[in-house]
Length: 250
Image (cartoon, rainbow, N blue to C red; front, side, top):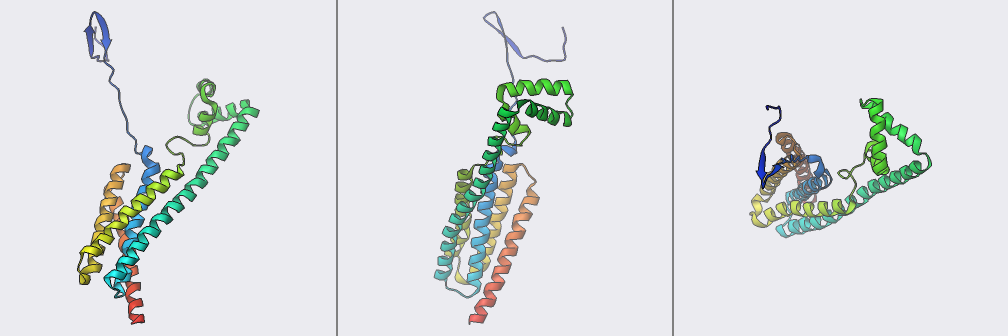
């Protein structure tokens, strides 16, 4: 008997056993929480530290002065990124918790209204009324709050705010990004310090753009161009200011 389905079956010990081929999907959105913090931290570490080093070096500072400024920028920037991310994402988390608490009360006090509200959401998406009603009844019977959080409030495990994760990720990636221009200062001859730091920083930004695009499933060229352009602009501006300031002081 022929069929549109193709089965890959074995008979083992007289029993009919079917091999189930499981289809696994990987979506880049599952990484959005830590990926955003990682790219932001690394980009800021490279750009801010590299720009500061270029600006200080352009003012005819000594290598030791440039290194001190760079190290200070690394530690100050890492702490600032961690604190900023934690405070920012904590605000998002507080808002999410408040919305869930409000939704919990509404489900307890007016469950019928909440059910009709969710049915309306599904109907607006193109689901037939009878199907929408049946689906809502089944899902609310299993997990009413989770269903409303996902479909009414737009919350999910993927997008849930994680302050500590964001803070740690940003601090670590900032430190890694800032270490590159600092290493360039240590290894390059003093006359070539500025161009070396610029080249190393731009190469690191290019690599960051590639890695960020790959991890997020985004176009590589656009990502590389974006981070490289703003990094080059930042270093050019600080180099110009450092040079003018050095000349004025001199």
